[in-house]
Amino acid sequence: MGGLFLDVIVAYIFKTAARLLKTGGSSRWPLAKGTVATANCRPQPALGCSTSHIVYSFMVNGARFWGMDEKAFIFQNSAKHHAERFLPESSVRVRYKPAEPTVSAVRDEDQVHP
Image (cartoon, rainbow, N blue to C red; front, side, top):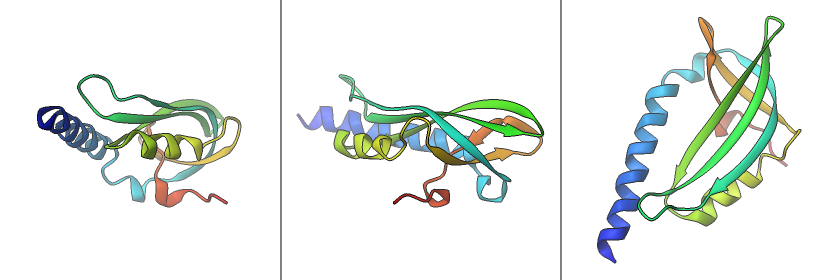
């Protein structure tokens, strides 16, 4: 049992590090208003951790871009609750890389939730 939990921790660390590398410095990127297309939580695979997936679109200079935010969680309930905060067709605040708007991020600290 301990080995399975270790797999969850390793997957969580790997996914979190990959997310940080992708979105490093995003707090200084411009904000755009986006729209949630889908939000779900994928169950923990046999080896790994649960992940919430938020698919969204946003506009920059008249062009539409799409992004997907993946956030790792140790517990599936946490991933599920995170995904449930983003209802399809609801607004989402998106940070995008100015020189490359195809690189974007949905940061929890930018969101306004009731």
